[in-house]
Amino acid sequence: MKLQITCPECNRQSLIDSGKVPLGKIKTNCNTCRKQFFIDKGQNVNCCLVQPSADSASEAEQGSWKIDRPEFEGIEYDLNGLGGLIRSGMVTGGTRVLAPNANQYREASKVKELRKFFEQKEKRDG
Ligand SMILES: [Zn+2]
Image (cartoon, rainbow, N blue to C red; front, side, top):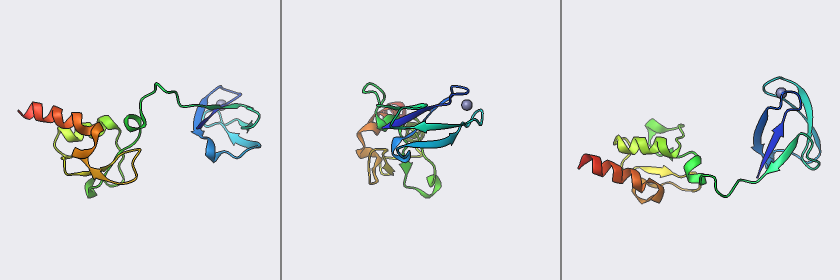
């Protein structure tokens, strides 16, 4: 669950993990106009909880993927970025990757979200 915070001064909206926000009145600063204001998660003061919508892209498509290779250490890719690495041959079927919704690395060829990129590469390479 995310908490959407709206600055009362400039109406800038930002999303943060609701779990990081304590209940009750807390003070925060707007990143844009620097205005200091209060939010209250329980009372919906300058903020409201938002449900991730069911028709939005899946977490695997939006989240960040990690690659278990020293040259990619510390870098996170979205699905399309990782797909580009697969098509260019920098990531092969045996490269271990960590999906956004997974808790352990798996070989890229065994991850269903990545299969289409290998197919595209095979088609292109003939
Ligand atoms: Zn503001």
